[in-house]
Length: 218
Image (cartoon, rainbow, N blue to C red; front, side, top):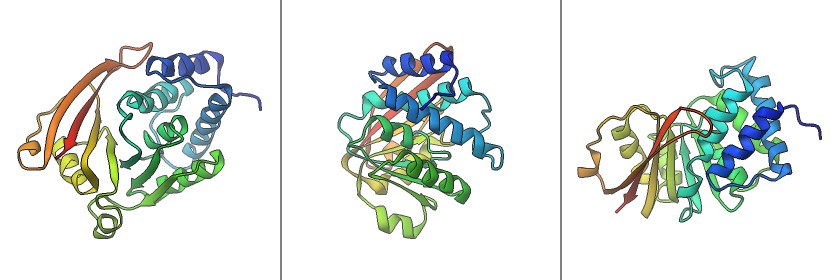
């Protein structure tokens, strides 16, 4: 299979992933290349992402998603709330085959794309569901099932803590992926969490600042 990704973007993906302790084999690079092409193709018809360039997608979607890899060592089941075009859940599943991943998003067209990518890449142990975390049906189906709950660029941290709590097992981890901006959070006093730590970093080969906040479910 010939790669369509430009060499510099391919190198950015491989070297960037290695920053987070991930070694991408050739077959995996081909899978990310296919994901990229399908995302750009679908994006012409439905708005999946504001990013329109290969480099933007590799950096701000693929590598941003993979940045939480170092925090998954104790997580075997992961719920990705508001997963959009599959980030970070699908890239994490791609590099962690053992991970049982559930994606949930309120926009049906985005879920359709997620399912298409899962089929196209032949991924097992990952499901994409249409709905919202606060829906009764979703809560009943998924309550207390996960070692980890993750969300990327969620608008309000307090809301994420509230929504994520029912899905976590005791001792599970909520991972909030944020940009450079930080807001205060007060929910830990009202909900069964202990704040563990905040990790701040820049995306590889860029000045783009990111942070991950980790909370343990008590």
